[in-house]
Image (cartoon, rainbow, N blue to C red; front, side, top):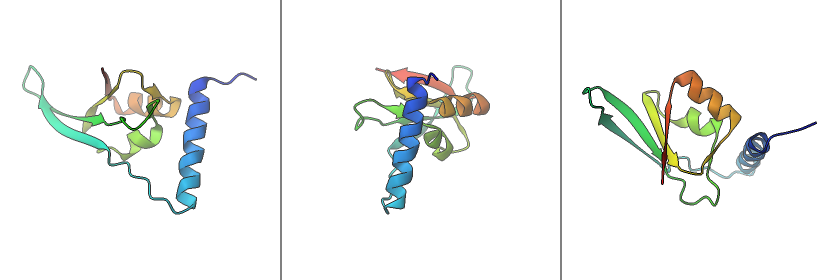
Length: 102
């Protein structure tokens, strides 16, 4: 049976977060910055920049997507961020634009 690297990462991240919470650790997901911007047509949209500077290999998970505000239409992530399959599904469902930042 084959398994993709993305699926392995998703499973590992989910299990680690679950175990940390069981042990009483409070996970700080507030390392994001949200702001309002206007596009060229003047429409206002909300975007959020995920600060993943503390990660050797940044990973965007389904949990990250679930924790952001409802009005977010764009997420800015570091260029080599791994997006888990669960996160990809939510991004499609919520029609969120992903922008990679150097």
